[in-house]
Length: 114
Image 1 (tube, one colour):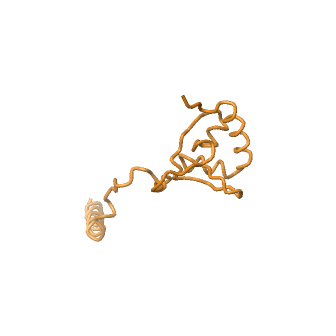
Image 2 (tube, helix red, strand yellow):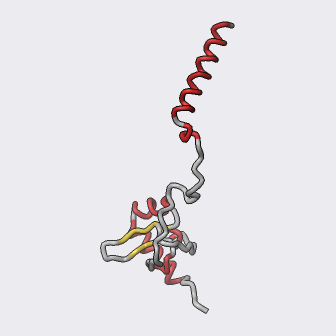
Image 3 (cartoon, helix red, strand yellow):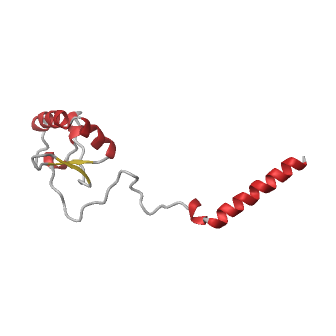
């Protein structure tokens, strides 16, 4: 029983030292709710291909608007916008395939202005 009390006291002492040494290590930072993939929103509006819609979404038959804070620029200078880092990573695996499929769907089901 003495061993357990001694071990418990040692653990508590160690926890106290760690907490006293760096109390901010246990603080929760709520200042950036965007997550690790959210980049800084550009100061002025950016104009990407497909009216700023995500090419991966278009290739899957879905219209998903993006603010272009995550983007990819092709060799020809065209800008493609993304809402998540995951969609950007998938796109980068085969950009021309996604661009072709996105173009095909976008031309077929382009959002119409009223």
